[in-house]
Length: 495
Image (cartoon, rainbow, N blue to C red; front, side, top):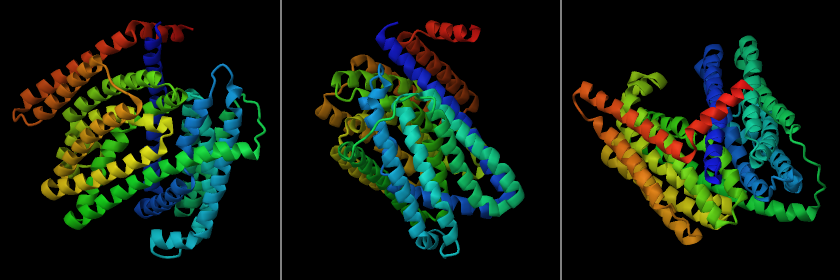
């Protein structure tokens, strides 16, 4: 098998491994939410949601972004022929995880009264925050282990640790909620954090790495670069949260709370359910890119391969979504949410442009280009706020979908210009041909929604689904060799 085919096959395998486990994690989340709704009702769900939101906010700031910056540094120094080559950097990442975990715990404990006032409007929940402060240490220690798994590209171990941590947390939470109802909220959050930590430690024992003595000078040098990039990533995340917060305030003041609910429902559908495709693919892609960050030629090949796979995966999803969007919204929400259909239809088209800009955007993080990264984060978030405000002002919810689409079109061209000027990155003509066909199929399906004759509309959409799947399978066969892929699967089954 050629190196190119092997690389494409690795992307498919990584996506299928982590994607399958991520699907199971979503099912666990759905079951957990259902059980909480049954045992402690809406009020209990509200308390859990607010507690977790407050803790995640503090954790996002005090964690200093090591869940991403740590992966970059481990992958960059990892020599696959000698796993102990990264022993010192792993030790440093784990030390940083411990220190930031302690820091987060102290912040929550010391500011527990303020967090209670901010979150609930009173100080009645101060002691709950004090009890839950220890979970930030548990979470950060778990993050330290998961960073190692992902940095070393041990994807099966990472997927299993994520899944079993969530599953054990669910199994323990069921009897707690059943017997103690609303009083089980704090113990359940703690037990869930502990189960994730213990599972991550269990799987870390499967990776045999020699313990390394790390001197303070090493910690200062390596730790400084890890934290520097981590702080930039944290600031970027906070800017995104701030942009979303400003938009929601504007929508609320202009259209009311109901419109905010529609806004959140629509973008949850786009970012959490469809956008999970990018999260799954990044699990292997980011460590791989970080490991070759000093070789622009190899980076170009890797980004182009990832971009190919991204558009091949997202194109059929977009066409299926556009075809069945009324049914999807009724299943996930209720018929009251059908008014978000125009918004999410424009928004889903944006995912095709996001797929490519996302692939290129990781170059900045893999390179550790923190100054450029934060500048682009400020600029793009400012643009997002302006476009969303204008879109909603002129066209309401549908305008938000339009602004989302326009934003990612601009984002794609801007990132393309930045990466070309900074790193001499470019796509070849073959990629543009395939990409153009994907765009044409998605846009054609989008306009088919406006056909008044239902029989004709859904017949044409069914044809587009078949064409998109055929197009993707044809190109996957060229890139990987589907016959080889199926044969390798059958061999594994017969062993």
